[in-house]
Each structure stands twice: as C-alpha cells, then as structure tokens.
Image (spheres, rainbow, N blue to C red):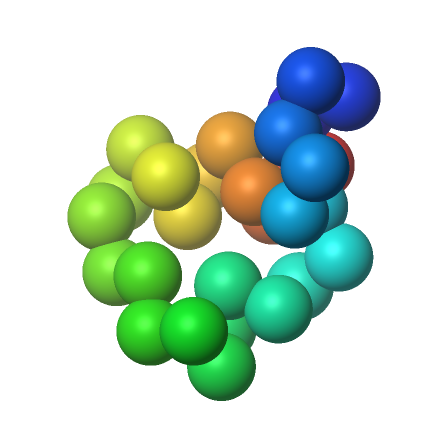
Length: 28
C-alpha cells in the first residue's frame, strides 16, 4: 500500500511469506 515504505518488491528477496503481507506489498 501507499503507506508501506517497502512496496518496491524487495520483500521477495527479504523473504516475507505471510499471505497478507505479500498481498499488501504486491499492491504497493
């Protein structure tokens, strides 16, 4: 989401796997 400072896809490499977190970051 816009409020998330890490909505750049880096979560993939970071290893975030929580479904809700993935979705939130994907929507960035």
